Length: 175
Image (cartoon, rainbow, N blue to C red; front, side, top):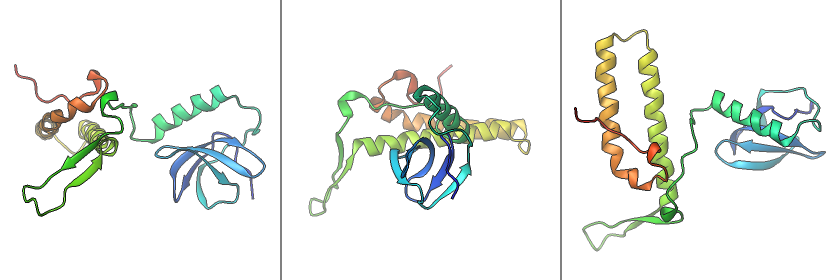
Protein backbone atom coordinates (compact mmCIF):
# COMPACT_ATOMS: atom_id res chain seq x y z
CA UNK A 1 0.00 0.00 0.00
CA UNK A 2 1.35 3.39 -1.03
CA UNK A 3 0.89 6.20 1.48
CA UNK A 4 -1.01 9.25 0.18
CA UNK A 5 0.45 12.69 0.78
CA UNK A 6 -1.32 15.76 2.13
CA UNK A 7 -3.43 17.33 -0.58
CA UNK A 8 -4.40 14.01 -2.18
CA UNK A 9 -8.01 13.90 -3.33
CA UNK A 10 -10.18 10.85 -2.62
CA UNK A 11 -13.75 9.65 -3.03
CA UNK A 12 -14.99 7.67 -0.02
CA UNK A 13 -18.15 5.52 -0.25
CA UNK A 14 -19.60 6.87 3.02
CA UNK A 15 -18.28 10.45 3.17
CA UNK A 16 -17.94 11.44 -0.52
CA UNK A 17 -15.17 13.55 -2.02
CA UNK A 18 -12.46 14.99 0.18
CA UNK A 19 -8.86 16.08 0.56
CA UNK A 20 -6.22 14.51 2.82
CA UNK A 21 -5.17 17.21 5.30
CA UNK A 22 -2.97 15.16 7.66
CA UNK A 23 -1.45 11.69 7.85
CA UNK A 24 -0.61 9.75 11.01
CA UNK A 25 0.81 6.27 11.40
CA UNK A 26 -2.72 4.75 11.37
CA UNK A 27 -5.08 7.34 9.90
CA UNK A 28 -5.71 9.87 7.16
CA UNK A 29 -7.37 13.07 8.29
CA UNK A 30 -9.65 13.99 5.41
CA UNK A 31 -11.76 17.10 4.96
CA UNK A 32 -14.83 16.04 3.00
CA UNK A 33 -16.95 18.50 0.98
CA UNK A 34 -20.24 17.37 2.48
CA UNK A 35 -19.17 15.89 5.83
CA UNK A 36 -16.29 18.03 7.13
CA UNK A 37 -13.23 16.56 8.87
CA UNK A 38 -13.15 12.79 9.41
CA UNK A 39 -10.36 10.39 10.28
CA UNK A 40 -10.25 7.18 8.28
CA UNK A 41 -7.94 4.16 8.54
CA UNK A 42 -5.03 4.07 6.12
CA UNK A 43 -6.38 0.84 4.61
CA UNK A 44 -9.99 2.07 4.27
CA UNK A 45 -11.87 1.50 1.03
CA UNK A 46 -11.80 4.66 -1.14
CA UNK A 47 -11.01 5.76 -4.66
CA UNK A 48 -7.91 7.89 -5.18
CA UNK A 49 -8.84 10.76 -7.49
CA UNK A 50 -5.45 12.47 -7.36
CA UNK A 51 -2.45 11.40 -5.29
CA UNK A 52 0.28 13.74 -4.13
CA UNK A 53 3.80 12.56 -3.47
CA UNK A 54 4.81 15.24 -0.93
CA UNK A 55 6.34 14.51 2.45
CA UNK A 56 3.52 14.14 4.93
CA UNK A 57 5.06 16.23 7.74
CA UNK A 58 6.33 19.25 5.79
CA UNK A 59 3.10 21.12 4.96
CA UNK A 60 1.74 23.85 7.21
CA UNK A 61 -1.94 24.13 8.09
CA UNK A 62 -2.09 27.35 6.03
CA UNK A 63 -0.75 25.50 2.99
CA UNK A 64 -3.28 22.71 3.47
CA UNK A 65 -6.14 25.16 3.88
CA UNK A 66 -5.09 27.12 0.78
CA UNK A 67 -4.80 23.92 -1.24
CA UNK A 68 -8.17 22.70 -0.02
CA UNK A 69 -9.88 25.96 -1.01
CA UNK A 70 -8.32 25.81 -4.48
CA UNK A 71 -9.28 22.15 -4.96
CA UNK A 72 -12.86 22.70 -3.81
CA UNK A 73 -13.26 25.68 -6.14
CA UNK A 74 -11.82 23.71 -9.04
CA UNK A 75 -13.66 20.41 -8.60
CA UNK A 76 -17.00 21.13 -6.98
CA UNK A 77 -20.23 22.91 -7.87
CA UNK A 78 -20.01 24.89 -4.63
CA UNK A 79 -19.25 28.52 -5.37
CA UNK A 80 -19.42 30.17 -1.95
CA UNK A 81 -20.31 29.53 1.65
CA UNK A 82 -23.95 30.41 2.25
CA UNK A 83 -25.01 31.08 5.83
CA UNK A 84 -28.48 30.87 7.24
CA UNK A 85 -29.64 33.91 9.26
CA UNK A 86 -28.79 33.46 12.94
CA UNK A 87 -32.43 33.64 14.08
CA UNK A 88 -33.27 30.51 12.06
CA UNK A 89 -30.32 28.31 13.17
CA UNK A 90 -31.58 25.16 14.87
CA UNK A 91 -35.20 25.99 14.02
CA UNK A 92 -37.74 23.81 12.28
CA UNK A 93 -40.44 24.07 9.64
CA UNK A 94 -43.78 22.56 10.56
CA UNK A 95 -46.14 21.48 7.77
CA UNK A 96 -49.67 20.96 9.00
CA UNK A 97 -52.30 19.45 6.70
CA UNK A 98 -55.79 20.94 6.65
CA UNK A 99 -57.14 17.53 7.64
CA UNK A 100 -56.52 17.43 11.41
CA UNK A 101 -56.69 13.63 11.43
CA UNK A 102 -53.43 13.57 9.48
CA UNK A 103 -50.04 13.96 11.12
CA UNK A 104 -47.96 17.12 10.67
CA UNK A 105 -44.38 17.02 9.39
CA UNK A 106 -41.39 18.74 11.00
CA UNK A 107 -38.28 19.53 8.97
CA UNK A 108 -35.06 20.98 10.42
CA UNK A 109 -34.78 24.43 8.88
CA UNK A 110 -31.02 24.00 8.37
CA UNK A 111 -31.69 20.97 6.12
CA UNK A 112 -34.38 22.85 4.23
CA UNK A 113 -32.04 25.84 3.77
CA UNK A 114 -29.29 23.55 2.48
CA UNK A 115 -31.67 22.11 -0.13
CA UNK A 116 -32.74 25.61 -1.21
CA UNK A 117 -29.12 26.71 -1.67
CA UNK A 118 -28.37 23.52 -3.62
CA UNK A 119 -31.25 24.35 -5.99
CA UNK A 120 -29.72 27.79 -6.47
CA UNK A 121 -26.26 26.36 -7.12
CA UNK A 122 -27.69 23.95 -9.69
CA UNK A 123 -29.58 26.76 -11.40
CA UNK A 124 -26.30 28.70 -11.61
CA UNK A 125 -24.51 25.72 -13.13
CA UNK A 126 -27.34 25.31 -15.64
CA UNK A 127 -27.08 29.01 -16.46
CA UNK A 128 -23.33 28.67 -17.11
CA UNK A 129 -23.87 25.62 -19.31
CA UNK A 130 -26.54 27.43 -21.32
CA UNK A 131 -24.30 30.47 -21.80
CA UNK A 132 -21.33 28.38 -22.92
CA UNK A 133 -23.34 26.01 -25.14
CA UNK A 134 -22.32 25.86 -28.79
CA UNK A 135 -25.49 23.90 -29.69
CA UNK A 136 -27.98 26.62 -28.78
CA UNK A 137 -28.58 29.74 -30.84
CA UNK A 138 -28.87 33.14 -29.12
CA UNK A 139 -32.70 33.12 -29.15
CA UNK A 140 -32.79 29.70 -27.44
CA UNK A 141 -30.24 30.88 -24.85
CA UNK A 142 -32.37 33.95 -24.07
CA UNK A 143 -35.53 31.84 -23.72
CA UNK A 144 -33.83 29.41 -21.31
CA UNK A 145 -32.27 32.30 -19.35
CA UNK A 146 -35.77 33.76 -18.86
CA UNK A 147 -36.98 30.45 -17.38
CA UNK A 148 -34.05 30.45 -14.96
CA UNK A 149 -34.70 34.07 -13.99
CA UNK A 150 -38.37 33.24 -13.33
CA UNK A 151 -37.24 30.27 -11.22
CA UNK A 152 -35.07 32.62 -9.14
CA UNK A 153 -38.10 34.87 -8.78
CA UNK A 154 -40.21 31.97 -7.51
CA UNK A 155 -37.58 31.27 -4.87
CA UNK A 156 -37.43 34.85 -3.49
CA UNK A 157 -39.93 33.78 -0.81
CA UNK A 158 -37.04 32.02 0.91
CA UNK A 159 -34.79 35.13 1.02
CA UNK A 160 -35.79 35.63 4.65
CA UNK A 161 -33.58 32.63 5.52
CA UNK A 162 -30.34 34.10 4.16
CA UNK A 163 -27.89 35.81 6.49
CA UNK A 164 -26.45 38.04 3.75
CA UNK A 165 -28.68 40.07 1.44
CA UNK A 166 -26.11 39.72 -1.35
CA UNK A 167 -26.68 35.94 -1.41
CA UNK A 168 -30.46 36.11 -1.75
CA UNK A 169 -32.46 35.11 -4.82
CA UNK A 170 -33.14 37.84 -7.35
CA UNK A 171 -35.91 37.43 -9.91
CA UNK A 172 -36.71 39.53 -12.94
CA UNK A 173 -36.44 43.24 -12.23
CA UNK A 174 -39.12 45.53 -13.59
CA UNK A 175 -37.91 48.08 -16.13
